Length: 223
Ligand SMILES: O=C(O)CCC(=O)C(=O)O
Ligand SMILES: [Fe+2]
Image (cartoon, rainbow, N blue to C red; front, side, top):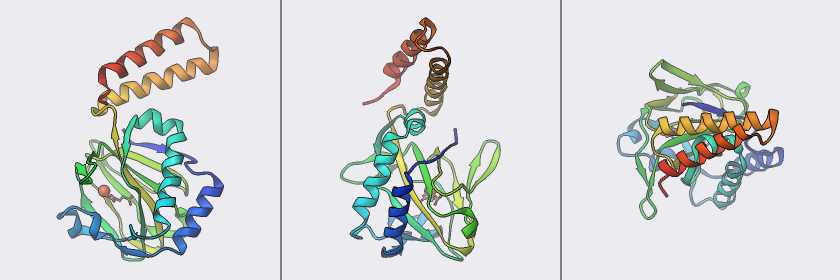
């Protein structure tokens, strides 16, 4: 399941993040890629030593923790550190799959990946995130402050930037529910029960669906 999330940050957070990134020190992105992805990774990232990194990361994580659709779709157990990437003209990230296990002291299994777009699409040429799916390639270039959440198990790439600058926040999620098909069932059930609640309130049907959702989550969640 590939899902787009709108309005991830507040206006104020978006402005603050972009101001801090404009003043930040960016270094080669090769340092945070696996040995083979490094061969095709040509971008820059905010230095992990940058004074702003901690604060920026906290802002994105806070926004995701309060985003209902993100919580419903990802069922997050753990979020990775957030990378802030900057692609100028000619930069790209060739076809790769993300590392399955990330981090040494606190290892995380990357079930889902996300890209939060921090530049307006009209301000740069190229730079689509292209994901290989069973239905073929899907090219994604979202509006500023929108996020795509996609399976980290896919092969994907970032097309070369032709003009302008593409800023994005990137991260990974270890989900409480490892199996993507189970996550989709839970997501669908949760969507239906919320829609029912919106139309008719707390009916006996809503209660029963809520019970089913909770009991399936109990079956499938790994804590
Ligand atoms: O910038 C993007 O949209 C994706 C980057 C990516 O694939 C990665 O960092 O592994
Ligand atoms: Fe990737």
